[in-house]
Amino acid sequence: MNTDTLCKFCTGNPSRYVCPKCGAPYCSLTCYKSSIHLECTEQFYKDCIQEELGVQDSEDVGKREMIDILKRVYGENEDSESDSDDEEFTDINDRLNGIDLNDADVVWSYLTDSEKAEFEHLVKSGDISKILPQFTPWWCLPIEKQLVSEVGKNINDSEIPTLITNIPKLSILSKKSPSDCIQWNLVNIITPYVFLIRYYNGKHKSYLSEFINGLYNLSKNLSLNQNFESYDIAVKSVELSIQEHEMFKGSQEGFILINNDLETIFSNGLDSNCNYNIKLALSDIHNLLTMYKNEQKNISLKKTEQGEFNRKFPDAKATYLIHVDIKKVRLLLKKIEYFLSWADEIKL
Image 1 (cartoon, rainbow, N blue to C red):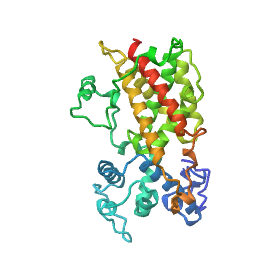
Image 2: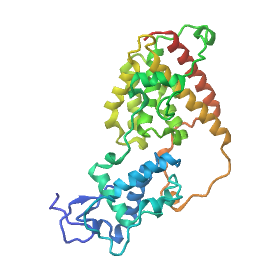
Image 3: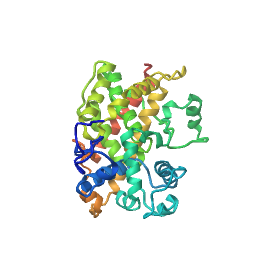
Image 4: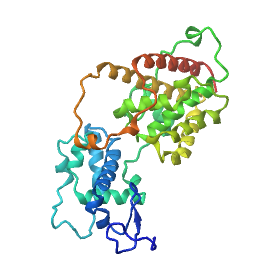
């Protein structure tokens, strides 16, 4: 607590908190929601809500997950006294019925002031991660379950990638011998793949454009054809790229988990094929690139009108230095096919 600084809004009480947006000291939630602080308050709440909703899809499964999240955020099962004398709480299921959960403007309009305030406190306390559905990436699943996926039994397509089996021989793709750097260049590609799947909490297919553009810009091998001379340098390059990007502020803390993921992928313990997880990762990247290419072909050139939220708070953080167009996608597909062929023939 900082007793030396007065609250900027009531000017009578010592400040206990600092606004995460403008840095103004304040003493209570009432002062934080003061009319002279309204624009900053609304922007902070909306940013939090949009970031939380941004990784959820609008399909039935995604909707059920989002309803569960909002229930946990807004504490329907709490026994505390209600302070909603002038604001009756409506069941979250009813309010979200028929709502497009990808539309931040619409979702925002259905949230009450008390819900926004509760969300703010969750974010500030660091408890926001506790309300997210638990996500287990495919490389952390038991190896037996991965092997079952090859014959198509009991598969959740959001968990296990489809393995590409008709991999051409390396000698057919190129007459030249692979560079000594190829295995480290491969690490530089799989590292951002792992990071982005974690970042989007497994919902990366719902934000395919952001995922593919992130993969391309975070991997210097993909975007600049840069070669790497060791495992550590290849991984560090991605970590530095993450630190440089506004969108991923604060994500560096989870990089220990990413290193564990990479260790799992690159040493999966399959005696018959030690590169099985590597081929699964490359197959997934190839499939995602193909999906992205088809998506780009179908995008309408017609501009859609932005809602109030997006007009007032444009998401400039989601832009990347280099945009992946269809021409780049074709080249990337060929590159991934080359890595797949190499991984199929070489034992790491």
